[in-house]
Length: 559
Image 1: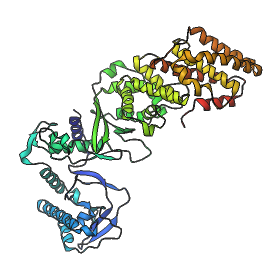
Image 2 (image 1 turned 90 degrees about the vertical axis):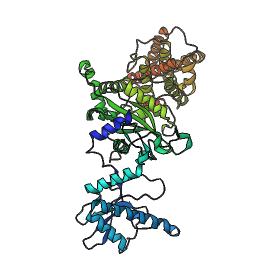
Image 3 (image 1 turned 180 degrees about the vertical axis):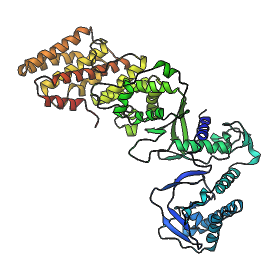
Image 4 (image 1 turned 135 degrees about the horizontal axis):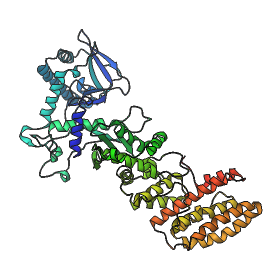
């Protein structure tokens, strides 16, 4: 299905895509053809790109029309000991130009052939065998942009990409046509160059078919889907911007998206998932839900999840949800992660990375996919997600706002139950109350001792998983801590005692064991209570520097 959609996209955006057999590529040298049949060499600016002829080549001799490496164009060998290979490639390049001359009668191409055959040129210093060459006239015209040249190159590639006797039914368009033996267009995913359809080992062969014939594709469809996907994978020219107009990279997974009805507003919402703009997110959250208007739209958006594996492109997921549903789910995604103390909306990357000590090295593709499935389709986040978050909080002995945002998102995704942004006095589940109580006991201990560590660094793991084994000890110690606080500030002692009594009065007994759901509730209760304590404590006549120090010690913000 997604291959057909890519071909449709190519047909709808024909004016935006390169011609068949062309691609936007960089080059290193201009070769200007002068009126007196000479070559003048001009070095191109670093990173300069144009739409030029292109083809994929794995091995052997495969020249590219009117642009190629200096080894092909000027017989410049990579290794003097292997000069014969450069000769062979140069002769193949000349042969291709002569065929173009016969088919197009283009005077500029004829002049290039004459100069190359005369060997009357001298290469400039600094030209390397792998440098790409591009021909240009003195008037600034490029011969490869001539319509007859474009048609010749298309026909040449078609003739060399498939055999007439290999007619088969194209799996994309359904027409009977010669199947492309090898798909020519490569795609950049991260640091890898990949192909979507290829088979070069016996394990990939099917019914005796090799290479790209395992999925029979006609030349026209191969070019259309390749050009479309290359266009959609383009990144922003400004490297400070994440992703591109139709793509975003999160970890090792690349998401490509496009609206079938060309809706720029919808596709722009996807950028918020990788790089959320606080103002735009607030606008999304405050926008009203209009049921009749949204459900009446039948427009759909195509979403393709890709990753790379040893020069092959892996299609991890594909969906065509309605536009209105995606918009509403993105709104719910940002609404579910709202939490007191959060400095900004969280991106997919931050939510997935908070499960690890070093998200850049440890993050798995499945984590990104789980969060994207929640953000785009409303699918429940798996227990694997919350298990990793809980283990990370236990290992560090404390949590940040991003952990709380991830926990709240997970809880809401399970059964769409409402969870408040800040402290919820009406929620009296044992796990939530235990988390709140632990936060109060931690604050009491810190106020009494004022050390660099709190009870969270030593006892959070036990308190959040087996509360009954540890809370007895913590409650006994709190009496000594409260007594010490009372000697310095009686008001603080009374307020902390009131908090403890309020929570324990609602808690009938400490649970023996908390499951993953309970540990998530414990974490959220702990975070809510801490934020409430120190929000109110800042209004009290106390040493606010100590408050700031405790927040920095245990509840670290994002650096």
